[in-house]
Image (cartoon, rainbow, N blue to C red; front, top):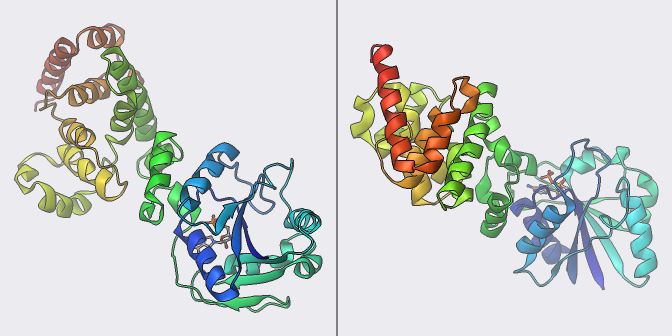
Length: 340
Ligand SMILES: Nc1ncnc2c1ncn2[C@@H]1O[C@H](COP(=O)(O)OP(=O)(O)O)[C@@H](O)[C@H]1O
């Protein structure tokens, strides 16, 4: 058996990894590709997402490819995951197999930093695929191939970019288990706005629970409601032209609701009409949909704003329509006081 091994953190697995595995099947004519998720990577000091979640995402992403398998050998071993230990163990376990170890050219550039590089290249045929069209000079006997570029990395995905390079079901898993999602917001708003967004998300959940609504949906409405808040007028204008030109009559301070409702579809691939609708109306409180009422109230009653909100929160939990009226009234008084 000829086996290609692809080690990595897979936090999360994306199309770049899959493309590499496909190329390995084509050019190396291997029988299978084994994905080996690391327990703890030697060259990155970030705390990884749990083994359970990374493993689950890998299984989802590989489900349609019978030649691609997950081998959890490194997750079953405590401590730092050194490739040398993995290869020694695999050799013992499968003495008749030929192994190829796949790396991207970013790894080839730092191959000297790997543990026992000279022994490594004796234990497996190391093969490098370029991530960006560049081949690298190396003193090691490592074959290099060009591959169809997949300009994506797990770190970009963790920041909420290029989510279209994920298997749809993996993205669904990410949202279901709330992986990385706070960072999607943290990347895009000020620290204060970020704390507000997380706090509102939790309050939305509480309100949803009190009224027998979907708490996960409410959480995402709260978390994403201000995703467009830090965008400038220049950036928002083309979005406004495209989605609701008629609303440009409103002050710019109101636009982030309209723009945010579209950004969550086009950037974050959240296609849920109730979520979009609630975010669209959250600034002006112009909808009586329960989720729209919830986010309007949670936004105004966020405890982090520093006002006494305990009684109002209790009122919203008891009677959503009444609480909504009350918050709207408070808001009208507040805006009048500000001269609006
Ligand atoms: N977009 C990509 N194209 C080609 N190879 C990639 C790509 N992304 C990751 N790899 C390779 O896959 C292996 C595992 O990478 P990993 O640490 O899980 O992901 P990432 O580099 O995306 O954070 C490494 O050898 C890396 O070079």
